[in-house]
Length: 168
Image 1 (cartoon, rainbow, N blue to C red):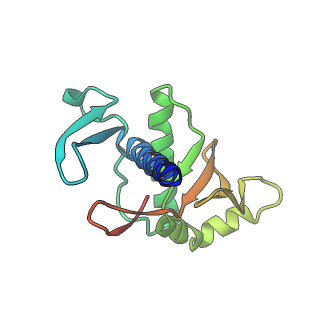
Image 2 (cartoon, rainbow, N blue to C red; image 1 turned 45 degrees about the horizontal axis):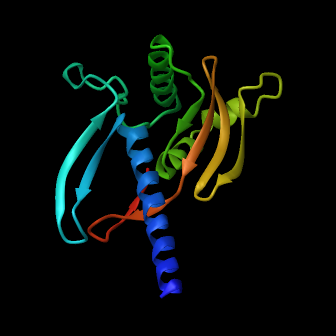
């Protein structure tokens, strides 16, 4: 009985940790989180939205890019606009967290390769390094004076319906 109780506590702890991680990701992406109440395994309670902004004024953390990045210039313009927006609101501008599909698109731009291949002007570097399980620091890039550390999370999770989803 003691071993069964110990296994149950470890399982519960792992589930809580995973839920906290998903809530942290949702907060990073949406500037808030929806907390789902559970009465028991089969009985779902209400959803409680928690926002870190005044909902009547809109979410200041959302930036919509101008379109699909089909060119290096379009990518730079959007990233620089995001950085400007953060800087104007006295927020730190240090990291760029993107999905694998975005990173794969960025790597294909010949202009990015040319900028990084200039030995006299240090505009950044690409040196992938796993910094945590499922998270790779892929580069440090300079966008008009904003030096951003680029992270690509590759984690997946199983949602409540059993579907495998990308975290980002």
